[in-house]
Image 1 (cartoon, rainbow, N blue to C red):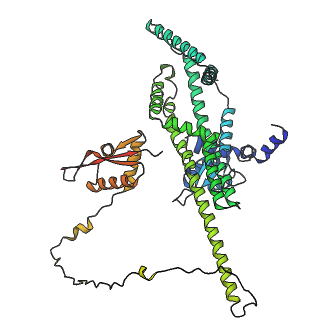
Image 2 (image 1 turned 120 degrees about the vertical axis):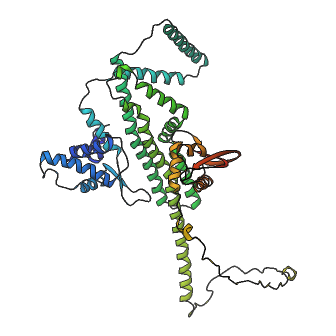
Image 3 (image 1 turned 45 degrees about the vertical axis):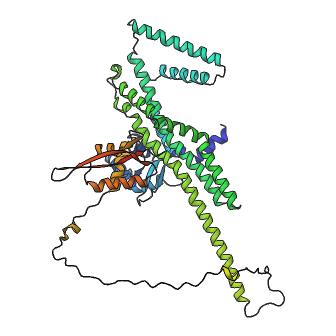
Amino acid sequence: MDFYAINSLRENHAGWSLLRAQNAPLALTFFMAAFTGPNQRNLRRQELIDVLDDVLFGLRDSEGEDRFPRPAGEYLDDWAADERQWLRKYYVPGEDEPHYDLTAAAEDVVRWVENLRGRDFVATQSRLTSIFAVLKQLVQQSETDPEVRLAELQQQRDGIDAEMQRIRDGNIRVMTGPEALDHLQQLTALAKDLLSDFREVEQNFRKLDRQVREQIATWDGTQGELLESIFDNQQDISSSLQGRTFQGFWDYLMSPQLRHELQDLLQRATHIEALAKTDMQAVANLHQDWLPAVEQTQATVRQLSQQMRRLLDDKVFLENKRIMQLIRSIESGALGTREAPPSGAFMEIDAPSVDVVLPFERPLYEPSRKVLVDDAVETADDADVDASALFGQFFVDKERLRANIDAILAEAEQTTLAEVTAAYPLSQGLAEVVAYYQLATESDWASINPEQSQRLSWQLPDGSIREATIEQIIFGRPA
């Protein structure tokens, strides 16, 4: 980077403007308290106002009432404005209250300020080990000579055999306290950097989508060329370097085998004696912090196709509107010249063609049939009818049932209705079973296996048990 590039960043970059702002300490304190500290994203406006009010109350109590005189809502609007871009303000479909998220530039500033405090313990050995591991994997996985790769694998096998023999002889080497703390610090730093990267990944996807929409908005070609351009751009988004690396991480995280291995390793790490005095609960919940961030980025990728479809629909609507305007102009021109047509040839049209219709092709006349309708209505004697059944109706909440299915699928690739009802017992009897059945028929990620059956049971208010045998219903996790 040269002088002009750095000067351009100083004038235009949102992170640099945050560092130069007069209220930068207040903004950074709030960002740490609301977003980076608890690892939260997509907060509603009222939630952020409550957090910012708490921060302002503490500062005004120590700095004076005139230190930060503006209300919390005005600070949020200022930080989310286009000239700031420290917060991203957007609306979720179906909600009127705006949501806020920290931008990638603002999070980079937060991480940089946190690192300015310095560290009592700097991880060096673990970084060197990571460098060797990554370099070794890069070289070995890029080798094309089979003999070289076999020799390297044989060398690794010999090393493993030697290590196993040392363990059998009772010579077990365990990490020392400083070494374990070194690797733990490296692990937590990488996990925080990964969470920080998700915002930048999502921002890059939105930039790619914005470029596609700008191209659609200024398109002057045909509809076929526009469709081809849209499909090419959508393929570019998914096949870009950003898209391929994120999809690889998503596939790795969604693999049941790798996810279970990760959970097992994190759980075993919490029992290391050398790290007993450290906060290992945060380490055990690393994968739980990743999932919401990855899911939001994945949702942004899914929205790209929907947004391009809506833009294309708008383009078709404008084209139809232009055609109707042409038709209206032709009609108005014809009406204007009806009373005084111009001399000579007014317009030319192609000669009309005659449709040949043979007499025997016409169907014979068939008289319509008269239908007798019995409209007599008999009055029923309902004096002895119990009308209480009309007031004893209840409603089965399908959203609650769908949430039960999603909770089970969070830990497994697929599940059956019997497993769902075992974890969340039926509380509304057969009506709830029918609702589950309807969810399965309406979902693209559920299947009904008529070859096998499953038995469901529930308890009535009087304590009796009812059972139902239905076809096996299997729910799968959406791709």
